[in-house]
Length: 130
Image (cartoon, rainbow, N blue to C red; front, side, top):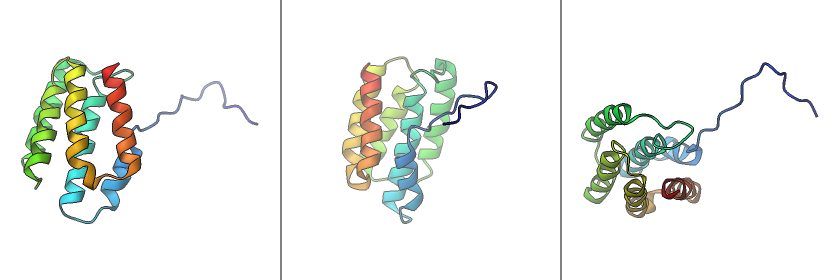
């Protein structure tokens, strides 16, 4: 077995591979947009945690951009409300509220998510609850 050279960088792993793949292969329409909105909100929530752990000011700016983007896509009312709530919570330092908001997002988007995507969201919920 070969070991990496000492000057190589440690690899990074994208935590939402299944969710991104789902969004990429879903047909145009509500399911795809729900998956994309969920991916966006999950990435914002993930930025509350190490190793990323962005500062509040940066997360607030990202949440403002996310709100603008969400206003441009078509989502069902329950999905829009749940995702918007999660986006709002990511702009403050309350991981517990983010976990509760992500639980709601997972519930309302469940019809559009596959097992891998749900598992990624459940892992994030556990990390947010810490």
